[in-house]
Amino acid sequence: MKLQKHKIFSTEKFFIILLIYLTIQAILKSFYSGVEYDDAEQFLLYQDGLKWIYSNAQPPLYNWLQYLFFKIFGLNIFALSLLKHILLFLIFYFSYKVLIELNISKTISILGSSLMFLLPQISWGCELKLSHSVLLLLLSILTIYYLFKLQKDNSLLNYTLIGIIVAFGILSKYSYLLFIVSIFIAIIIDKNSRDIILNRKFILTLFIITIIILPHFFYVYLYFDDIFLKITNKVHQNHTLLFSIKSLTLAILAFLGPLSLVIIWLLKKCKIENKNPNIKFLLLILIINIILIVTLTIFGIFDTFKERWLLPYLFLVPIILVGYVNKECLLKVSKKILNIVYFFMFIMILIFNARFYC
Image (cartoon, rainbow, N blue to C red; front, side):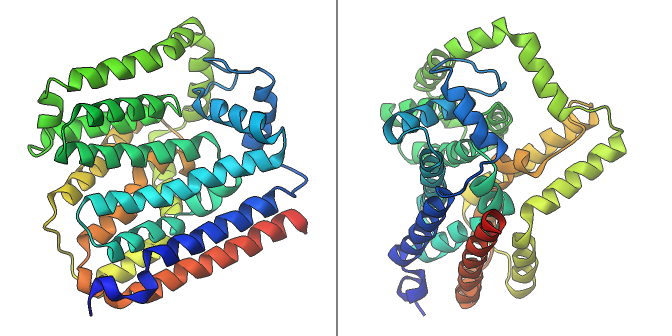
């Protein structure tokens, strides 16, 4: 059976179903009488206008986007919901595009994108509670996408685009910095990627990043004590190392959620094989991320964890999974997996609306 002819994996079909799902969620959420903390915060910050730094100790990019949507669509829940669901659609679309960029078939790329829905922090957290983290996740995926485009075409345009995306990632959420450090270390280690930073055009990338983020970090410098205190109060609460490791382990397991069951099932059913060096490169980034997080935990920088903090690191798991699992075996079980994803979409609609209307 040819991968391209597997009807259930029509690119158009998957993204149409996804678009219908997100549209239903966006419209229904617009009629809710209440909002979560992050969304309520956006109404308050809108009163401050466009600023380089806000009182919530977060970078300003999401606030700017939300400000724009409020200006266009009015100060209402619909404007909140529309922005978030557009970002969610782009998250699934560019996770698909990452796999296409790695020369993986459309069939398997759609499967990899759909598996993102089985991560609770995407199907539940991004939908219901998160704001800045949704934009952070999209920019993390875009970073990977344009990094691979840069490997194929080291044009001035691609070096410019990667600079803009990295700068926007930093302005979306500070945890992006750990993600980009992991990528930089992986590039140094990986001989196939090393030329990216050895090219003189990389100086342009660094210049663009600096110019874009400099005004924000000037204000961070002015209000450093207040911002540092707010951030450390979140990640450091004087717990023991044992508690910290336990917190991290539970956060990882909770983050993977239903996807962990699919991983176990696939590993039992299918062989592991990978001839794609870029999939190994993604695995290297993931491993470095985990090593850095564990190191920061051992040294007491982090001593408590929430699942949403792992978004810019563990989103790589479904992409790496479909890259490593035997493709013929994946095709045989693909219909079951995609039906599970569609079932979860249906359940999410029921749960969200039961939660708000009951």
